[in-house]
Image 1 (tube, one colour):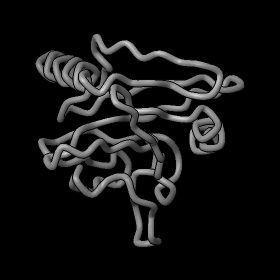
Image 2: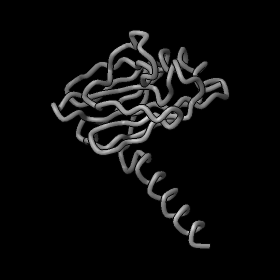
Image 3: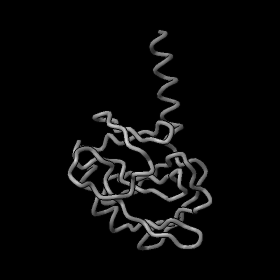
Image 4: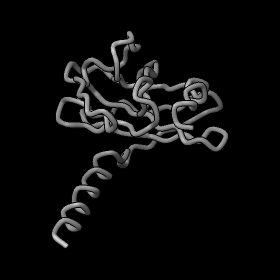
Length: 142
């Protein structure tokens, strides 16, 4: 019983740590807009349904103030077990490798596990994620 209770507490903390909270994103035909004023140093995950496949991606502010985005999947580990935040780092839920959040937002150079690259642009108020890129990345979650 004690293990069950501890497991439920850990699951609740994991779910709470991965939610997008109260941030309200907007969308048009081509993109999602995530308000910059809602992005913090805590990973916020978002889902996009494309042709029946749920694509999960995340946004976080690095310690240098830069916005970091990535698919919640790894090209190398396979599958979409995703990542979880540990302080200023992010950890692969499959292989356990840990990365600095400040290093995210680059393409994998073939050195092993790495959060799959997802580009973004910024305007004065928003992080902009293209729906076409999310759709193109759906194979990671199929």
